[in-house]
Image 1 (cartoon, rainbow, N blue to C red):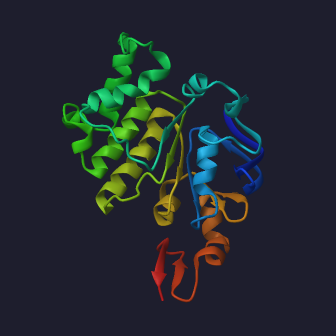
Image 2: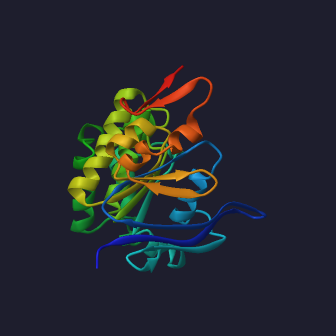
Length: 253
């Protein structure tokens, strides 16, 4: 049986407010998946629910038959890691020690004391190309550097799935491209499944295997199918902006 993600009859939201009802998605693992849509439609709520940060109203989120929402926090941390939009507010911690926090599901209260833990931390540092930063203080890094280090921490956690909420928010163009390339490389070369929410639709169409379009519900597309549909036009186009299929970009009109 092939590895799979299954979201079944999932309803998400908050007390007294359902944001999206009855979500049903089947997807393959080892893909880069983008969650896209207008603001306020439920992208972040979906990722927070899938991550276990907020409880679902109903339904299941299973990876290879295991319902992630019904296992313990420690067991979930061995299957799924999270990079949120909120930068960690931590002072006086070296970058290497920050990345090592990703090993928390496997260590005891004494901290890292196993050869495998150190090997996973070193691997994460190498994959994210942050060797030059490991002796710096985390709170002195630039936004782009922090995001690479946050991803390294998630890689050190060594989970099959990584969820990132707006991983390129507040980054300049060069850092956006570097982060997106890093995520794609993790899928291709490290067999990770990565789910991101993003407003960078043009880039998502180029690098992602699948897109989940959030708009009063969720529809799934391959990039080609989404480009050839009317969905982007219906949701994003208006009096002053249009989507150009040839350049895969939105243009002012």
